[in-house]
Image (cartoon, rainbow, N blue to C red; front, top):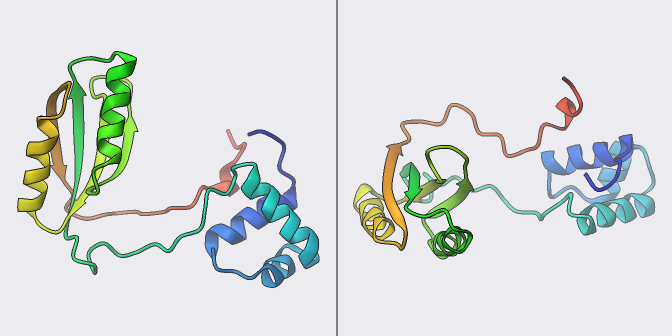
Length: 159
């Protein structure tokens, strides 16, 4: 963290995580301060990067994206330029929703969504042909047991 967050900052972050559409007046009431300093604090948290943005969480299945797959990607080279080139490649791929660089046997894990298996298979063919991709192993998601987009602020500092 770039600075120590006080109790009010943490309350603000907790409330915004729970409801990104909360008004400043309601937020101020919930955290126990008046609206002007509340707005100043929210803006400071945004400027300092604690708040990356606000967006709605959509249901992929209801929107026709019935297939979710994790793809473990092993590259043939771990040179910095090759890693960056792969990251640029996946940023341009709309089916890739998340991309994480890992340590260990797998270089990247991708979370992908697709409307059907044929679309995903076409993507895998494209992915395996990308520069420096040695192999790709995929795992089809059967169901999601937990999804929590929020940061667990109530666990901070516990060891």
